[in-house]
Length: 312
Image (tube, rainbow, N blue to C red):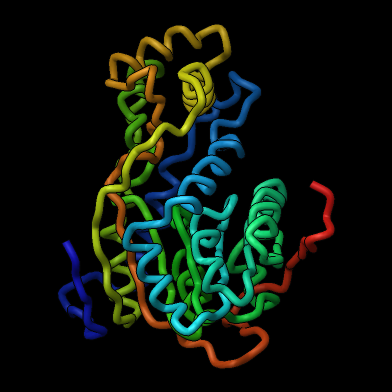
């Protein structure tokens, strides 16, 4: 399904402040109760870097899908790329043949190292900026195309975040996100192991409503991302899922049984938290001029840059 949304606001729809407040509240509802998180020492929110690296390698070798196609078309003629929340480079590495410059922003230095190595192997030195968007946006140069894949559900202040994306793109912003919160697929397991009912919002439809209320004219298409194996073994998938569920190592066998019951094929270990899910690609025109940097109102000045001579 593809839709084109006009900039005209529906006066029957909630106002932007209400939509942004609801988004923030919905994200806050995903907080894990302290009595559960305090019982383990491992963070439930960290996905192993090798998962991101494998995905980046896979899409770089075989690019495709609406998000790639929109960004690729916008890079004719070739131009600069800014990837926000880049991870290991799944959004930007496939664009390197048409990228004259590449800037990657991420809050994980290890992810930026993985991206830098992969970009260099493909003949492009990436400028890597360590920190959180949009706080460091004033220190980042504008680009022709801005990409942002699978980041929005980590962003409480969504209005500022989207405004900074728009202000940094000369040609196009391309966002990719799952149709529903990526961790809703674990809800039944939370109920099974903890008796805890987890939320099912926010969703991508809320992003569309916010963009519409911001007065942006955007296009979007919903599609199914193929769910290739994310892990080299079922044991690794089990371990990641166990940590996500705030369970100790001695309950790994129970988690493995629960995954099989949920329909996971041990010979094809697909991450329940993201792969094979309905995805939305959303795109809209940028507003940046040919400036070195832009400063959205009310944003701070923190930044840290990683150069390509940084040791991995």
